[in-house]
Length: 298
Image (cartoon, rainbow, N blue to C red; front, top):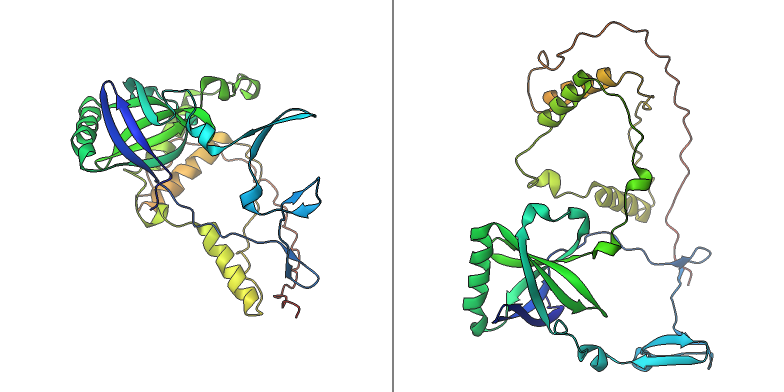
């Protein structure tokens, strides 16, 4: 992994030199743009609107448009020398219980690596202090052209930095809050039973490591590259409208218990009066379109 930033953690009067490395990676398939007529690559060019010519990256810099007549150029050196204590340091400003941090505020994650032998002792000191108190550190740091809020925590004996949103960046959910709805205690109990039947110890293992969408997309790409028909998903019975919430909950509990190898007899805990079966509408089948790989024009 290549560092994306280097600086130091400011922990009171203690300074810990660190390097910031990405904690995650993506395996998503990336597409390019092509001209469908001849499959020629379509690229984005950076053109100066005054000179009407393409310019190389060495001639491109940052600027802020004050008004239509005034543009202020800002270079990287000026950004690095910003008059902020957090410009070159991750400044810890408080420690809080982990459960007080709303997950909606947390975004990207980065591993913090000690930079040099001098960082070993203070790095370990901060890590052990966080682990022993079951707390997380709230910090401020300047990165990507702005000061950001951060969260430091311990993961497998390594300090992790999460970028966080400021208070005014979190939208209020009030406009989409559901209207008051009446629920019976039996319905709530059954929902709790469903939660219990779907509870696992953690989300590690093959089930949580496989991106099924990317795997299916790879199958489609390979099939088309070989001039074959892309695989089609299995026909499924269309889901109908749920007219009986309790019945849907009981069936969900039964399925969850069966998938875990538990007995099905105990799944239905409420007796339901028989109801007339809803009429099923047959799903209209749409013939699959033929798709073949286009060869690039010479």
